[in-house]
Length: 116
Length: 109
Image 1 (cartoon, rainbow over the protein chains, first blue to last red):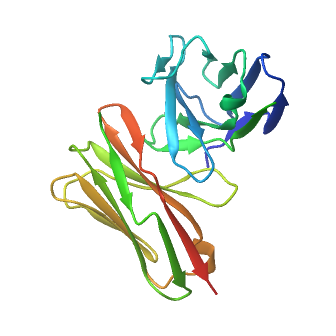
Image 2 (tube, rainbow over the protein chains, first blue to last red):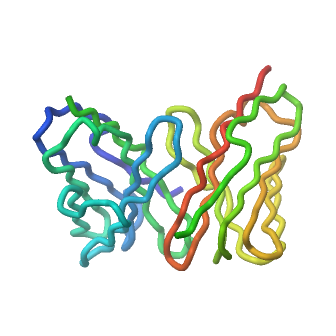
Image 3 (tube, one colour):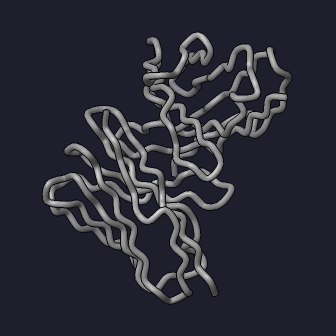
């Protein structure tokens, strides 16, 4: 089956620093990837849609200058949390659309970010 | 904006009992998907429903899409401990996915 990886799986950083999270589709090319945020025991909140070779589309209320998304290749999208604050601590999950599989999303294992 | 609601929020069942979760949208959906997330894991795609009134089965799981394409249900027959997790529906509005809040299922052995 389609595999999506994320790196790192968890990260602790200090307030004010930036953190980059990578999302890779390992066995397929993904022109579209999604970034979600999930708080404990809550649903997934779509942050942005990442399209290869173009600017990401951010959901209402998500600061594009704070959450920088780069989808530079068909297998890699990155999310950079800039000037992180404790309230940015969360579980960040990416997903990818596999060509030919309709709208089925393949999710990565997620990245747990803790900002101290 | 689009809203997707799910009930119940939590469900505790005895192993062998049936379980149903319901998903409702404030507006008509293009299609609906169901995902399962095990504790500590990531969402895994279960199924996609596209047609009005569609019913699909996967072993003990039965998925339905309402005639008006505004609601859906997932029914599990004779639950097992392996069914534990949170079940999310996700509605597709145009090109945007909106996830419901999920139903957390606990199965007591």
